[in-house]
Length: 232
Ligand SMILES: *Cc1c(COP(=O)(O)O)cnc(C)c1O
Image 1 (spheres, helix red, strand yellow):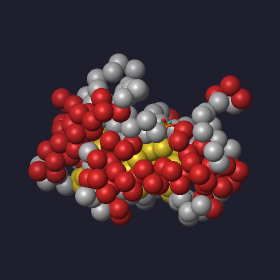
Image 2 (cartoon, helix red, strand yellow; image 1 turned 90 degrees about the vertical axis):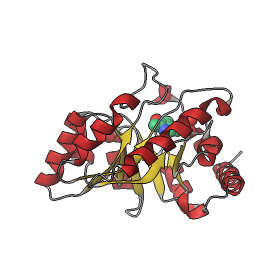
Image 3 (cartoon, protein in one colour; image 1 turned 30 degrees about the vertical axis):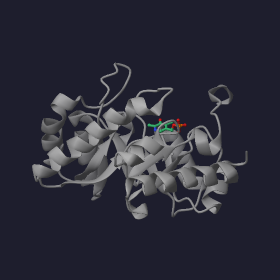
Image 4 (cartoon, protein in one colour; image 1 turned 180 degrees about the horizontal axis):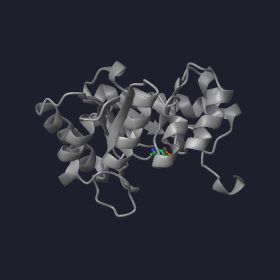
């Protein structure tokens, strides 16, 4: 299938999931995850109307940022090291992967220095898998409270990477838990914290994620095809 056909079929699936769950189509945004994919393919998806793209590496995001249209909203979705914050802070529209107070402090420091307001999501390790980044659920509220007190940084919601599963239904409970955490946090009415965005769902499970309340879904393989890490 061509990229165009792939994108159309993802869009159809999104529309169906939105319909099934009685949600507002405007509340769900597709992020095309373009990591490892060349600029030419991203341009093709851009020309088909997509403006939100996701990258998991700072260097790759920065390289592509310079080569592609300036109205792209670049989402940083991968683990961010504190020493790379300065390269990406003015280029990422939203940093999805803030997983520690230490990282948030660095973002805040750099934001203040450059008079920026930086929007972030807190990554939650909802499945408890050891290989995964993210704040553990039992430390979530205190982490949100600590980060919210930092200048120049705004918490806009939560993000999670669910386990890789064959049957996406297995991740439904994790997505539902994330939704519940956002409600808990909202009820706390913390300054500089809104729960506007819930970033969850990938190629294997985005339909279930939409049914459970995702506002950003991050889809790579189903749009661009399999990634080949060997050629990089
Ligand atoms: C690669 C990646 C995705 C997209 O994964 P696909 O299975 O290719 O859709 C989504 N989120 C994160 C954090 C990723 O690193």
